[in-house]
Amino acid sequence: MLTGMANASVVMTGTRVIFPSSVMEKTIQLKNPDAQPYVVQLQMTDESGKADKNSLFSPVPPVFRMEPNTGQSVRLIFTGKGLPEDKESVFYLDFTQLPSLKKSQQEQNQLIIAIRNRVKVFYRPVSLEGTQSDAYRALNFSIVNENLSVENPTGFYLPIREAKLLINGQSIKLADNIMLSPKSKTLWHLSKKITALSGSRLQLIFVNDYGVDIKRERVL
Image 1 (tube, rainbow, N blue to C red):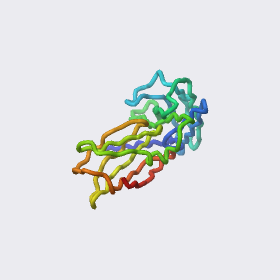
Image 2: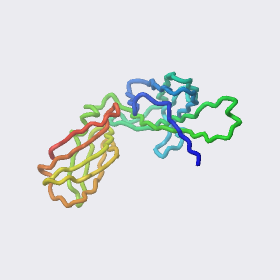
Image 3: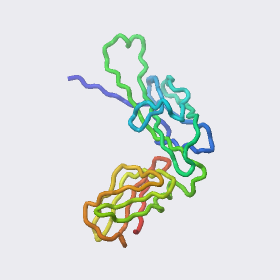
Image 4: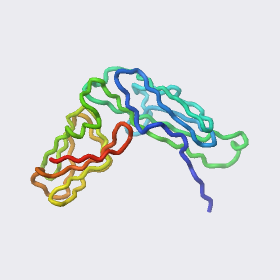
């Protein structure tokens, strides 16, 4: 049997893009630490991963070649208007990389795999009060039937890696890898019957603007 290896060598600085409403463009840094060149394509996509032809953002240049051990700056330009000013809006930027083949390699039979990466672009109005890292403090919780109602009254998206409820010596898992939308309510299923939240502790691991996991705890 023969096996192959695929390496995603082109990487972006950071795991998300925060786009303040006060600017019309943002610079994104990519680097290729590999010993071979790559052709890179950037495009805005919708939540399902399909190309978003009506996107309000445009990456420039959309296609380029990256030589070995080099970097590339890409401009992400905001081309629209009319987004909400009381909450964040989220968009998706995909960048696909293909190894650039020499002429001597082009006639050889080989499997070439395109590697696609996706990052979220958060359009953030400068008028929002508070900070994303403190948004968890404003979350409201209540019991609805056998669920935990979670309200995010802030204007920030809050990506949550893990949420647990500590009550009466028990640890109840609530959610994994979700994102709370701004000014929204959602229900988390409670695997054990709870009649009151008073005195319980909520443990959250959320992702901040720099892509770092932050662990916080609140007494409810």
